[in-house]
Length: 60
Image (cartoon, rainbow, N blue to C red; front, side):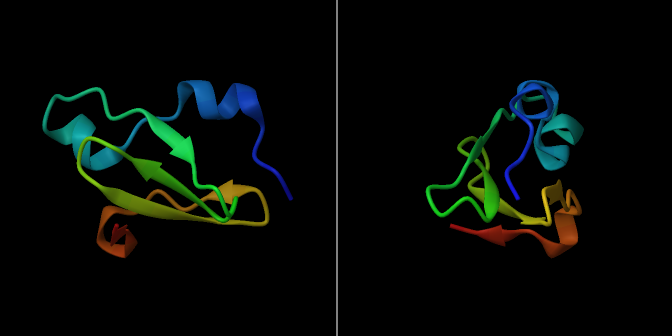
């Protein structure tokens, strides 16, 4: 299931938000995660719902 493009426009990386950075997220090429270029963390997307938990994010 794809993530809604409107949702992708407003989502920001929670780690970057804590550090007062913008933290824009982009959909990974495989479509199964969101990636933050600023802090280099990847957040899993499960059934079209992003799992935005910093402790569960993986570096890339």
